[in-house]
Image (tube, rainbow, N blue to C red; front, side, top):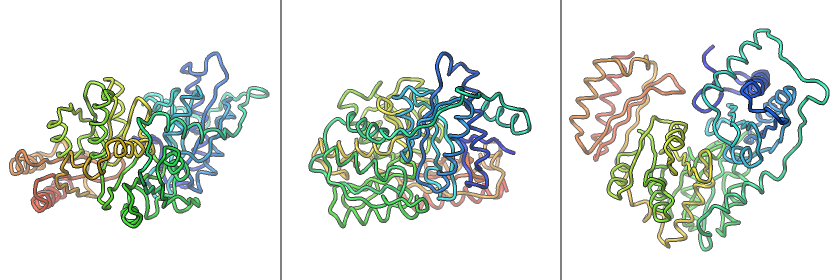
Length: 452
């Protein structure tokens, strides 16, 4: 069996890979590991548990709650809320642990478990390792030390979570959204109620699509991975912009008034300049990953904003931000972290701040996003190869070097093995789309022959 924890918690097909037994066992293990680490010392432990609307989340939530309570942890069940809401509530309620049940943008049959530490921050890698080790040792027969009597955890619903989180979002906005018309695509996910409510309370006129979750339709042909319906709705309703979330609403993509996509790089660029103007872009620096478009890097250089790049994954962006005191970071996929107001990517907050910039400046989103020019980018996923040899193949290194020589300063090549799938990603940027396609296909062929 491989490692359970990936870059974003434990994920798999619900009731096949991610079973009720696994959810319960991991929750008990998490309680024991945190107790041994001294997290619960001197007080009765409390956990916040939330989920997205997937049908499987209902039984997985029950398993997690049962596991925590059986280990002596009191549980505040907040119901269907975005991942960043669970993180926020974990912090503001002084809870010792947060648990979110979601598989984010994945299809409905999948689900996942993500743990948050006290304060709403991601659980440290070493604690995840200890939770997994503890779970495995007890799954093989080692008995648990179980509390009895008054020592067992108590469970109650925390119905104020929705209003507390929405009030927080409104409270951190730099200005209201009066006069702005927004279409929101909730992906039939965790933000289906939260995001429209927050935008409305902030003063925007709101049109909604993808906000009728039934447990089965999450992410289905909607949300941040399927923008066509949002594009059409923005144009149809004459909206100023559209905002699309994923299933757990930790990310946000947008479209302008003409239905043109505004990706995470462009959102970061707009927010970086807004925050610098407000003197809140600490150290005049924004953090992004190596997958960010070269056009973003060139725009930041032109505008005099420092750029720090990390490995792909919002966890690496967040680690860099926390380690060096930066305020803004994110990914092209729409994970944007505003660390002064959130401990993780927050799609609703990102959309609100983007709309607030439109309202404050009186400029269109298209005009604001023109601060950067997206260079054509081609991505090819090469499957059925030995991804572990990406960094050691001399044949591949020679092909990459030749491609970089051909592209010069107007392009870029990036090869990386996927952290979640058995494939190698080939990404090429160039000023000309045809050149980018040709170089990417040539490199993909070399990856297949060298690593196949």
